[in-house]
Length: 54
Image (cartoon, rainbow, N blue to C red; front, side):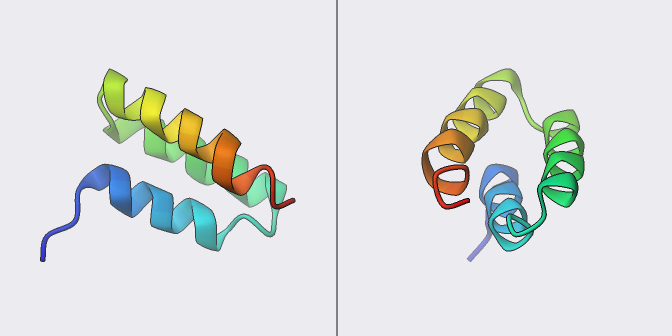
C-alpha cells in the first residue's frame, strides 16, 4: 500500500514529537514538499494530535 506524502509527514512528526526542536525542524522540512491544502491539513493535525500530547 502506497502512502501519501502527507501521511508520511504525519508519521515522522508523531515519532519526533518528544523533542520540540526536532519537531519544528521536521515540520519545516515537511511544508517544503507538500501542497498548500496538505500544509493546511498537516497544521490542523499537528495542533489537534501532537501539540496536545506535550
